[in-house]
Structure formats: C-alpha cells, structure tokens
Image 1 (cartoon, rainbow, N blue to C red):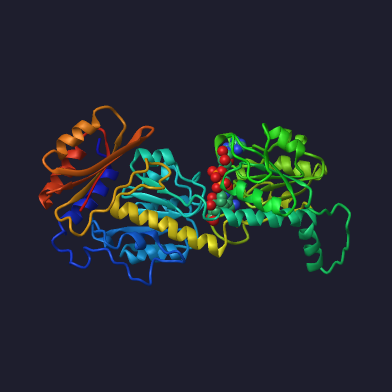
Image 2 (image 1 turned 90 degrees about the vertical axis):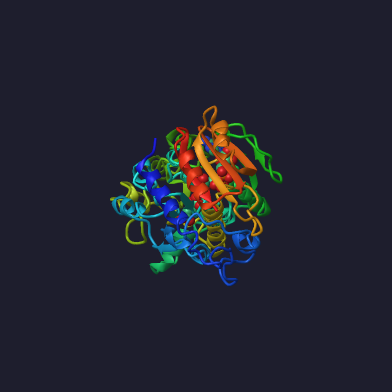
Length: 472
Ligand SMILES: NC(=O)C1=CN([C@@H]2O[C@H](COP(=O)(O)OP(=O)(O)OC[C@H]3O[C@@H](n4cnc5c(N)ncnc54)[C@H](O)[C@@H]3O)[C@@H](O)[C@H]2O)C=CC1
Ligand SMILES: O=C(O)CCC(=O)C(=O)O
C-alpha cells in the first residue's frame, strides 16, 4: 500500500528524474573539494569515490538535512561538500518542534537526546535516513524505521576509548574522594584526610557488559594494577588476565568497583536495584556511563546513605535535558536534589564520549555512511537494515542505473522484481534480509530516462514494496 511518506519520497525522485538532462557535466561527477570532508585518515567517501560516477537520484541541493545536538564540524563539512542543504542546531528539540522540522527533511542527524519515536517518525514523510552521531541507538524506534524503509546508521566504537578513559579517571577520583576535597577547597575549607581513601592497585574492577567499552576499559584497568572480572550475557574472550564470571551476582559480590557498559534494553532497565546493592561489598563503588535507566537511582541513594556504597559516578540519567542550562533539578528527575546532596558522588552531564577526538571521528564516520546511503544506496554499517554493498557504477558505464528495492521479506518477491528488470541487462544484483525486511540492489545497463520511471512505477506497484529508489 502506498503511504503519504512514499508519495513524498518518490516525488523527490520524480522531480529529479526530469532534471537529468539539466544537470551540468560537473555536477554529474563526484569531486568534493580537497579541503573538505577529510579529517586525519580522511573521509571514506572522499577516498573511495574518486573514479565512481556520482549517481543522481536528485539534485544534491534538493536534499535537506537537519543536524541536531551540535554534530561535529567534520560531519557538517562532509555533508555540505555534497551540496546538500544542511541546517545545524546545537541542541535537540522538544517533540512538537521536532515533528514540525522532521516533516521537511530527507536526513536527520542526532546524538543521544533526540527521541525518534514511532509518533515522531510517522510525521517524517520525506525521511530516507537517520544518522546517530553516537554509539547508542536506543533513542530511535529502529523497528518502525526499518518497516518504513528509513535506514539508521551510528558510529559503533569511535568514542569507546573516551568513555573508558573517563571511567579510569572516575575510579581514582572516587577512591580518593577527590570530588569532595575539591568542592571543600572551592568553599575555602582545608580538610586533609586519609580515612577511607584507597589506592586502586590490587582492587577488583567488575565490568558489566564486556563489549567495545568494557573490554577497552579492562586493558586500561589492568595496566594500573587492578584485577578485572566481567559479566556479560555472551561468553566472550577475556583480554589480558581478566576473568569472566557466570552471574551478575557473583560479580557484585567480588568487585570493589562496579562499572556498567550495557545498552539500554528492557532487560537492562533497573539492572542495578535494591537486591543488587545488597549483593555488593560494603564500601564498594558504582559507576554508570551507559544509560540512565540501568540504575534504580532511589535505590542507589538509599545504599549510599546506608554506607553500603561508598561512592558513585553517574554520567547518564533517565531524563536528560535537551540543552545546557540549570536543568538538573527535581522537575527533571524527582530525586535530583537528594542525589546532589550525597557525599563522594560524581555527576557529569553525559560527557563520556565528549572529546574532540571522538566527536571528530564520529562526524566523519556517520557522515560518510549517510553520503554512501544517499548517493549509492549502500547500507554498510546500518543498524536496522540488512548490510548490502556493491561496487560503484563507474564513469565509463553509460546508461546504467542502480535499482534499490526495500521490501517485506515474503516469498516470491525476487521473481517479480526480476520480471520487471528482465528487459534490461542486470549487471550485478544482491539481496539480503534482516527479519521482516529485505533489501535488494541491482545495477542494470541499457537504461534510458523513460525506463527509469517505468522501472520505479512497476516496482512501486508490487505489494511487497516498502521503498523504491532508482539512482542513475
Ligand atoms: N556515556 C556516554 O557518553 C556513552 C555511553 N554509551 C553507552 O554504553 C553502552 C555500551 O557501549 P559499547 O561497549 O560500545 O556496547 P557494545 O554493544 O560493544 O557492548 C555491550 C555489551 O553489553 C552486553 N550486554 C547486553 N545486555 C546485557 C545484560 N543484560 N547483562 C550483561 N551484559 C549485557 C552485550 O553482550 C555486549 O557485550 C552503549 O549502548 C551506550 O548506551 C556509549 C558511548 C558513550
Ligand atoms: O555524545 C553523545 O551525545 C552520546 C554519547 C553516547 O551516549 C553514545 O555514543 O551512545
């Protein structure tokens, strides 16, 4: 069934199909300015596409991109170098304003705060793709997006090291009560104490979630003389001398410092609550730089007041404000003032991944993924669509077109698609599925402008269709 979104998105395609002849020879080729789109190792897009033909599903200038949450300059440059229209905002937007804006755009770039729920996405009639300029993708309804042919990309590990380094800093800061001493000095109080201040050498670090961040942290912690144990739902190879433990309870019973590096899922909601605090060693410490929902904060407050937990560092919270300002109060999270009143607690505004290095690398990685997807339909690194890639159509290949057909994964689709493509020479074709959704890409030759419209119209008429794009 054709939805308003499909009509809006294909009308972009139609509008541009007819502008094919009007495209100037230079705009038909991919040649971003050398000064743009590269940082350090450089943008993948600008490195790999030199001899590739830039496929024209549209005039690049028709593509509207909204970048929220202060996406790094590197990413903005790569997208602007393509000639897309890029609107940039430093903050995220409240839902009503987001809905207004998202109706207009083909691409949205966000970080962790912008919630792309089904309610928001259903208003996004033109949206082709979402770029999460971060690791976490829990803020996007990935399933809804896939079912409506909206690809989602993220940066799976460019900020892992930054988070791991922050956690190392926090372990020492908590062990030495540095936060409290510093606050006292700022207030003019000299308070030289050693009671309950510790070296971290020889202490046990318990890592919950031994993925990119957890395993990186494991290496750093061992280098500083800590013993590392970890708990993960998967059996994972231990790095160095680290040791996997079979249950969360076992980890909590053994660790002096517990640090959380799991994604936000229904299973990780309140993963650490009253029962888990009871299992922890008296005088141990908790660090959470994963997602705010993973810790039951009222239970943490109780455990800290009771002396069970000697210190905590929280970088993430169940409700985080959309912009910087004086927002960390009870209006946002009912327990905010209780938390602020505790001793030896480090509270940071979700800055785990906020380093120049991480943000620059993320900007390049995600912008490259977006450009590849918009211009060539390549889904490599997509988190919600099957990962499909094919070599580019080259400048020598005239009258070639790339057909992309996102469809429901039901029997008989390939036969019908190939009947439609049969009048042309299919040079290469690939198809893959992920759950209910399949992604087919075919490069066909001997295709004239009128054929492009016919191919798209025929594919659009199939009832398995989610989205058709023909790039040429
Ligand atoms: N504070 C910040 O600025 C940042 C926070 N993050 C958060 O950190 C999380 C972890 O990041 P990565 O290490 O890159 O993710 P990852 O996907 O590489 O690793 C997560 C690990 O957690 C494990 N896991 C999942 N559910 C679990 C459960 N119930 N119990 C135990 N283990 C479980 C997985 O098997 C996996 O090994 C992200 O999902 C994100 O939410 C990521 C980057 C920056
Ligand atoms: O830097 C950000 O805004 C988000 C960092 C984060 O939590 C992530 O990458 O998942």
